[in-house]
Length: 382
Image (tube, rainbow, N blue to C red; front, side):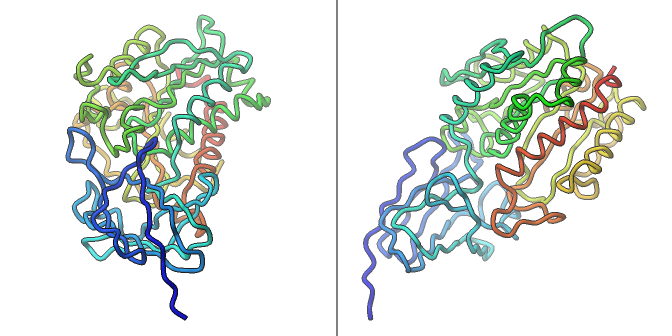
């Protein structure tokens, strides 16, 4: 029996949507491309909806410019994510031939969403902020503004009392790294639970949170940059109102409040592991900071199988750090423990999950483990 497939409708006109249609005339093999960031050559993030799928039939989607993307080596071993309801996301069979990335779906329903990683929507962000500020001891301390005029909330958990340690966690400087905001949701979940470990942590420290540093880029479906095409994690020595007000806002608040520990949460396209990058290349790096980094990493390894210390970025030579990066800049400015936390777009190969790969839930669970570690070492931060 011959099955006639209906014409597909492909849409990305929504929060974090990104796709270009090259040829959708054959519903079995749809040819697509990823749209670059505004005012930038970066591209890798994709997110689109397909309507008109034929249940029981296989549909293939081909991203024809994947081989020219910002991190073309990242496609090896990568599997795209799909969802029928935007709640449960699962990995689908994916191939990369060096030029194009293609993935298949044996359709079960007439519509589905596809993305580079499980998206964190602006609507969910807004609900997260509302939930957070409803919690006892959590307040909206300040609000910055992006270039497009979107809010950048700064939350504080704690009473701001004199002498307390000040722990900062920021996320999604790179807008396509949605796992970073899932991580912050995990922090807020734990604050809401208010267990003895969290209570003890907040006795000694205030926790400052910026859940989304780059709301414009996230909404526009960017990988790397804000509305002006600026990579925010390369703007910490040159932040200004014209191109990077998001970073300028964070820096002004840090100067006002102080910083005793800084965690910049990211996702890495290529490395299928969870890891941290430290400040060993900073001119002001000391044995005290080296010991704090070691303590953090060693304790996090003990706390969760989703962290490891073997795979990661090459270490910077002494005095050769790139101080335009957030973690390096903050670590140097405040003489504090300062780390970049990286999670994978693929899976964590030391603890794989074939159905989901690395996902939002695992990002949230990692955040809980990080809070356990900070609770153990908070009094040693100064």
